[in-house]
Amino acid sequence: MVNQITDGVRITVETGYEERYSDMDSGNFVFTYKITIENTNDFPVQLLSRHWDIFDSNGELTTVDGEGVVGKQPILHPGEYYNYESACNLKTTIGRMSGYYNMVRVPDNKKLRVEIPEFELAVPFMLN
Image 1: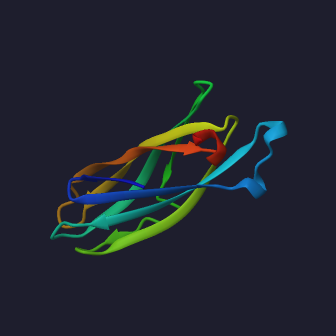
Image 2: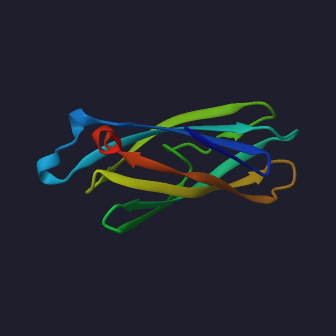
């Protein structure tokens, strides 16, 4: 698990490997990640969009940009948090992801770029 705070917004990431959906022979490895977004500010914030940089161990970079997360643009009031789970496919047994959320402070629409800490994706037997 990794976490980081940017502009009063804490991002925590937990990862998993989905062996049942992966196929080593064809080079398809499925990883899940659970994100918790927590507002530690004294004002509400809203998540508008996301940016991901996904690297595999061959050095291939995939960039993903989109509105919200899992189809939502949550507003988080002070002390609230939002959880979601998603997944990605890699062609290798090890990779990493990082990125950021574009958010706004609700009271004044000030833009915030909240960093998502880099995290590793690895098939468990690769770590032994």
